[in-house]
Length: 330
Image (cartoon, rainbow, N blue to C red; front, side):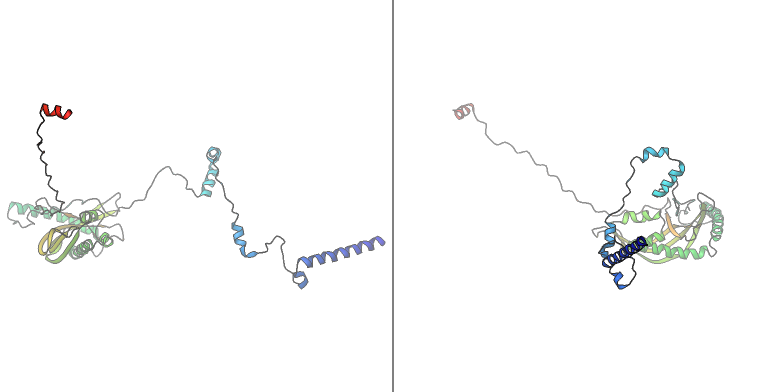
């Protein structure tokens, strides 16, 4: 019994001493509030995030990986490439491309000499009439193909739409609005229109149409596959315009802003029919061989200064005599 009472007293004394130690180190024990506390918690929690970022784990590269990659299995190589975000190599190289315009005019329209003013009774006029009928049948087939993609397409109404595109494109060229110009011309026509006018100022004005525009030619073709179809329509314009081109110094090099000229043009419009968002755009201009040469522009050059050859100066000194030479030596 004595040993049991001694053990009980020792246990009570130890519990009271531990309770006193806890109350001294943990103030919440005196208030009777149970709070979970850590002895490893920092005394200033305001900069806890900065202390965590002070030490960062850096994954060092394995420079001997190329030596051991031959020993890895295909599954291990795949998992390692997936971990590093590397796509697996392919045995072929494919690059996506888009064909928004063709590179030339297929089956170009050949304007008749004299713009079709020859009489049908003459040999040349009869030949032109037969060629026009043969080309008209192919054009009707092309128009039928276009109507399979555009139900409301009509050559008579398209001619007016083509004239609006023609005017809009030339106004954008004068104002150097290349974003609008890209919507009106194809990738083939854009450098042809802008290359020679980069350092120039252009003044262009559309006055009126002397004859209503009309469709004279239509063709359709497929590229790469049968479903990728392009269409080209040639429209004849007979208009009155003014054109003046100035160089970077403000000097007139071509045309005039006052004198109006009658212009007959055959403009090719192209559209990617397979593209549901395709637009009719200017593709190229047909220039027949019988058309006279255009008047060249006047360019300015730096005038070279004339080179003046200097004449050799004659020697006017009198040669010394032998006696004078000896006297000078003495």
